[in-house]
Structures are given as C-alpha cells and as structure tokens.
Length: 131
Image (tube, rainbow, N blue to C red):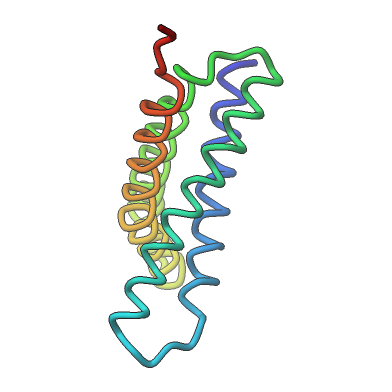
C-alpha cells in the first residue's frame, strides 16, 4: 500500500507541476527579467504547495513524511526521465516522440528544480530538533 501511495503521489506531482508551470508560462509579460522572476517565484510556490499537500497526505495515512517525501521525489524523477525514453525506443512514432520529448524536458527542467526545493523544505521543516 505504501508503494502504491508513493507512486500515485509521484505521478500526481508530475502532472500538476507541469500543469501549473505551463499556466504560469502563459501569463503574457513583455519584460524578460520580470518573466524570469515570475517563473522562479512560481517554481517556489508550486514546490511549497506540493510539499504541504504530500506531507499532509502522508501524515493522515500514518506514513513518515520525513522519509517518504524523498521517495516521491526520486520516483518522480525516475518516471519522468526513463518513461519517455522507453516510449521513444518502443514506439518510434513522430507524434509520440514529440510528446515524450516534451515530457522529458518538463521532467528535467521543472522536476529537478521543484523536487530539490521540496527536499530542502523537507529537510529544514521536518528535521527540527526540540531543545
């Protein structure tokens, strides 16, 4: 059951961070510096949102959020990087190859940045030692 919840969380995270970052990218801004700043603020906010959702979900299921959030991020990157590569190898169709390439780019660009931020939040917000 824990493996299923972790896999489902990783897939959920991948779908929704891609969706949110595409929505942020669709905001029409002419200034490139402001657009880049908005993009990184969006990455930060999406990472906070997913960290809180996943931590809340794991706490409600009596799973150790401190431990399993790392598994979700790693599985997210593995699925986001290796699944499109396997799709390109198995089904060399032009449309599917384009889709798989876009998924791969999204996973590498958004996935690594958002998961690193989630890992930092997990480390600094759940590893508080009580004095």
